[in-house]
Length: 465
Image 1: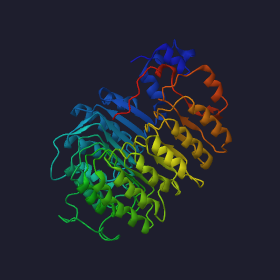
Image 2 (image 1 turned 135 degrees about the vertical axis):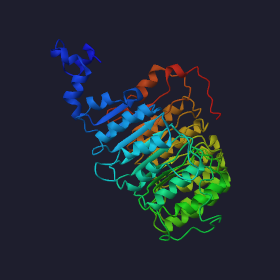
Image 3 (image 1 turned 90 degrees about the horizontal axis):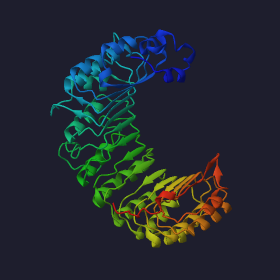
Image 4 (image 1 turned 60 degrees about the horizontal axis):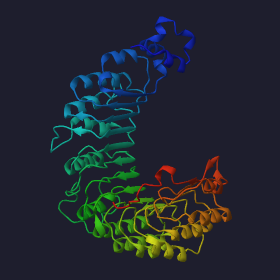
């Protein structure tokens, strides 16, 4: 394979373009391969020739795409063995993996003369596991999960995994007392995955800490987009007790509805009573109503140690949720996402009236709420009371053009550190003089305002999900 003259100039070899070896990719791999630490590899390059070209490399990160056949796996395994002592991150994308393939790959990761590996981050995304055994995971995968004390991140995203696979995976991790800190099972179909937890019991009261096995190191659990329902949340509440140091929980895009969130509220209260580090909760698009959200917000507002971040975006809550939102804004919460919850002009009016004391907010998303001019009035009040706010997203709120004058005036008076204000999607008849109005507002050399595009003027507004 030859390297073009233009590419040779880009890598500083323009003075040697006439040298016959400089035009060959193999020459550059052999000369400089030991400097390579990250590699992205398509399936056609998972061959022995690649291993020869990169025999001097000390890869730390490898991303592999479209692994589909035994030939691909054989070539990949040789490369993994060659870099087993230095490789710390491995990611698969668009692959089809049989149990044999998985075991072979995992077995190739072990450091020579040991039964352990040094992988810290392992991901399989948008792929398929073939011929899944309903009773057990592939032996090589189990050994990989059990023997890697350095493994801190496991991401199995969008792989068509079912509840049985997820249950077996959790069991293996618990049995191994895994030191995992990030577990991502998002966008699969694991409904019912905790149905066997504590036998058939409903687990009305969470198990006491210290009893049984636990994932002491787990900090992040992402199970969004898995079609989880109320019963799943009830079982999840039991499982979360075995994750005593969890900081981030994401169960967005699951139709848990109000009954599901009511099952989760006791866990949140008990977690803070135990001085749990739970700090971020994501409940986007969970089919919550104003009633369920109000119960949650009232509970969160009274916690001994309030959350740092909360997202209720894309739930149809309506303007009546403004009152409970006032309470949560009065805590030490730093990040709040209530985009697309249907606040409307009435909701923004109530929020603006209720803001009195200084806020700890750093980032807020109030986009897609059809607030009109009341959105601008709320922003003006918010900026005067939130000295630490850095980012505000108020896109797609049907704000009239006169809102810009109100916002600019408020920004001049505020003494905050705002870096980003997103006003896109408001369909203004934008004029050149508006550019001069916002030109003075910069932070760290960048404009604060993100304004509607000229090209977006004739695009119809549509916030219907």
